[in-house]
Amino acid sequence: MAVFQSVFDIIGPVMVGPSSSHTAGAVRIGLAARSIFGEKPEEVVITFFGSFGHTYRGHGTDIAMIAGLLGKPTASEEIRHAYKLAEKEGMRVEVKVSDRNAGHPNTAQVVMHAGDRTMSITARSIGGGMIDLVEVDGFNVHVSCDNPVVLIFHRDRPGLIATVTRFLAEYEVNVSQMEVSRKERGSQALMIVATDGTIPQEVTDKIRDIRDVGPIIFLSALKREPDLVPIDSIAKQKGLTV
Amino acid sequence: MKLYPRHFSTVVHNCNISGIPLSRYFLDIEIVLNECTEEEIIRKMENNLRVMENAAAGGMAGVRSFSGLTGGDAARLDAYRAKGSPFGGSLYLEAMINALAVNEVNASMGVICATPTAGSSGILPGVLLAIRNRLNLSRRAQLDFLITAGGAGILIGNQASLSGAEGGCQAEVGSASAMTAAAIVEAAGGTPAQSGHALAIALKNILGLTCDPVASLVEVPCIKRNAIGVVNAIAAAEMALAGIESRIPADEVIQAMGSIGRMMPMALRETALGGLAQTPTARRMTKMLKEEGHILWPFPASGGDD
Image (cartoon, rainbow over all chains, first blue to last red):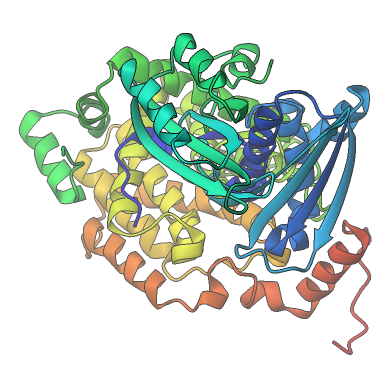
């Protein structure tokens, strides 16, 4: 059962209607996808599963997700014009519905393309605007996006994970959560590291230089509401201007 | 871990000992538990009040939901008020118009402040924006109104529920009108104990209300229930201000609401599997939404064979 401790749990959050799970959560999935992709996609294919598939039109779930992909925060008045904005910004959008059981009623997959790059993410909207990122490029993960995390793509080999954590330890960066996922032994793997505080640039550079380490993605926390910060600076906070 | 007081009776007792209103008490707890300053709280609440004002103004202009199911009723009620002399009392009508406006904005993907949820976001601002001129409330008194309502909402949420999926509409529209009733009493000069009676009376009026939204959308019957919620809140507050007491104490009414919610079948808790959502018309609307993407008006009358 929920435990409420602040009047702002009751008077708030400020969000775009009509449903925290079907719209606010959908905007955050879009924002997370955009942050992970790191640039504005030229083309996105959104697939809705379960309840999302049945009610996305009435709730504007597609509109909300596209707005997130364009970097709009959950309380932006521009959200409702997302299709027009996408056209203006040159982002092609295709929306599909799948009958496949995705394990949670509010699940969406977003596949993004730009140039020769392609990336996919799958996320669930689990209520109150909270999300659970469950797949990145075929790797199974669990990321809430409430705290900053680093995604490190690498080849699965002995000692690599230890090297990463050693560099973090040298600079006294504390790991609060860590998850490793691989497709098969010795193949591509994904390491997700959540830390207390930011990782210094020197550490990032050292990790980047480790043999068999591929792309590194920094994912800042997606705030559930924008508080009192102007929209531009929120977009920057969310790492959307990569 | 520092914890919020659990019972309304404790809160009333502490207010009486210190001789402070509910808003001051809730504000002091907020400062201690969330380690923030009074200025920060006031600034954030001012921001939320502005969102409420914008939403009400936006809805008055007349908006339509993406499903096509709802919209324009705030403007309709406002035109009715301007044209004739409403016999239900102008304050009631004004609050109802505001509540419809905010909830129509919610359904049209506008920006709202959840109070306590998006589906019940019209009730608290609906009443506050109507009553503030009547009671000559200063800006600070309006923010105190929201703080009192927020504190009352915490007590309801922690003893019962604020979610339609958990406790039905009584947990959303019921809680929203109960916390609003408590805030009205304070703003109108009543005592903390009277706020408790208002909360209890308002919540009792809506016990058992199911969450059975047509096509799973936060529109029918949610929007009109927001208008009924303001009437419930004002009526309960006026009874309490007159010295009428709830025979069942506020905490026991809240716990009864929680208990009813737990007994409620899943079909009546936001799943759209029962009640209004499964009426023949609602089923036809759901089908049209799925096939056409939105509801076309005039909605064709039933052929009678469903």
